[in-house]
Image (tube, rainbow, N blue to C red; front, side, top):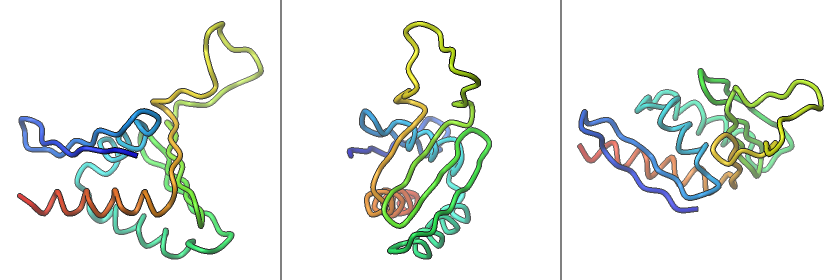
Length: 120
């Protein structure tokens, strides 16, 4: 999983993730937005569920983050399906709306994000 941190013209940090992990980048950009208290909360929850069968979730304005002892999933809140009917050509898996990654990989990205913010 590759990622890159950039600053836009206003100085805000933007995260770009590799293909298949775009929703994770969107979560950082839309939900975290340099809010280290939210990052602290997620990292604390990760340490509590790590190595256990427990799960934890945080619903944000645009994205929901789920984590368990091994994996993290980020899903766009608008990605809900009603009924079995889908438009032709649509897929349940929309790469920009759903991302999965390992818990350790997620924590590495979170630590790198925090370090990038501290470089001001």
